[in-house]
Length: 179
Ligand code: IMP
Ligand code: MG
Image 1 (cartoon, protein in one colour):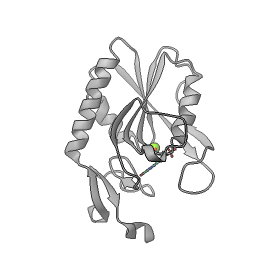
Image 2: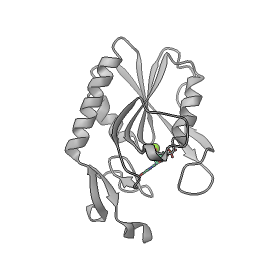
Image 3: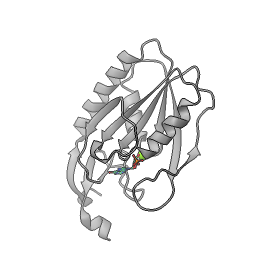
Image 4: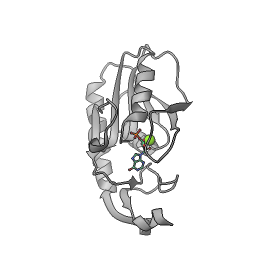
């Protein structure tokens, strides 16, 4: 697995520091609120589990999953929800947890859908941001780290459903795609 990685972008130690810092910030910002963390499956699971352990507040966890249909490797605007959360969010301050914000199409769709369920508030946290790739009108309220426009894997992020369990974030070697 490690031999397929060209370059490590974010090390395990850096991931620890990033999640700790973000968790402490969330702890400050969500005092007295009823926090519901909603992870976007599957990529966010490593980030969500580490982040939530640095949040010193009562909080609930749930997961949502969307698939983008249409053509190509870039997400289209045609998004289908394949696993949903509660219809009524009126008592919660929702924090949407993403692995990476790329075009933003997927998250924008989820955000617009959840806001209609009247949450107390809704905010977005993403571990990685590729701001140069943004198409949809959506911005993260909390960002771990900006990454260049390269395809990254590990710590939840996949290539063809593999490499999610790499403990760091890295760039795949080109020959892996060419196999
Ligand atoms: P978006 O709708 O274009 O923002 O797509 C976001 C989703 O595409 C992310 O949640 C990831 O699952 C996936 N994605 C985008 N960029 C990468 C990458 O560099 N590596 C792995 N997955 C990625
Ligand atoms: Mg994702």
